[in-house]
Length: 365
Ligand code: A3P
Ligand code: MG
Ligand code: MG
Image (cartoon, rainbow, N blue to C red; front, side, top):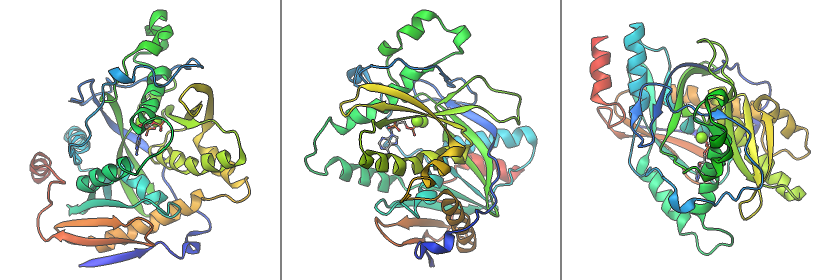
């Protein structure tokens, strides 16, 4: 059994955007500094303006780096959903449950020509659960690391810059609870990306109700009463803009920034601009909701937010008509392919997508 969703012609996704729901956090979890799961908000970070002029490579040799080669499936997300359901005594009402990262790949597929992706999906109790296909992720990473000689710093160091910027821009407690010494010495803090705060939201695109889990980098102030919008902050680094060409690249990057933040309802993005060798030279605040206008106001815009939404809305509907029986399904886009293909790879069961613990709970409910 298989079905194909055409990305081309893309003109059919133009026009007013399908309705979207404002993402609402209904649960959260943390990974501590050893990447141990915790059902709380203990790893939340507070934004505090970083110092300019810092070398983002500093401390690379002491980086506490997460080994993300291990397949974590949807485990933490489903644990958190289960805890929420135990509390409320009822099932969440989502049509699709997945990580924010998977939904990002789908939403940018219309304008992202090169990248491919592979996901596994299964239908369980009227809801589609989607995980990343770990083997594919590891294979594409290996390819990227062996893509011949390149100029500039090693890829691992460049990747470290992003995490270093997070450490430079955040506090583990509110400003009032933090010592001046800590604030002034953030440059010397050990960078650890095993520690994360993840928000679990209910949101909607078109006719589909989604439950998404994803990391949020920081909060502007502190958490409000439940149900109120949260002043999340997404942190990003980017090469400083020195030419029209740099600006084109930055505007293209804004698509990922926007989609990622839109999906979890993160209202503000802080961009740290760096030199080509990783010196932080400027910090800029952007409002997520303004990004589509900023991009459209420049001639020759390479993407359009409404079209991303319409594409995602239609693809999600296609997914729900296609994945209509048990088993494990593969969602695959080959690099540069004009289609997304969905086909069954296991006829029965749910693979490793849904842990027994979750099934046992749902059977009881
Ligand atoms: P930058 O985005 O500043 O480069 P996120 O921005 O999603 O919170 O991710 C934090 C950092 O993780 C990124 O910082 C980058 O360093 C690294 N990162 C995220 N996604 C990545 C990917 N697909 N490949 C390599 N590094 C990635
Ligand atoms: Mg992050
Ligand atoms: Mg970030």
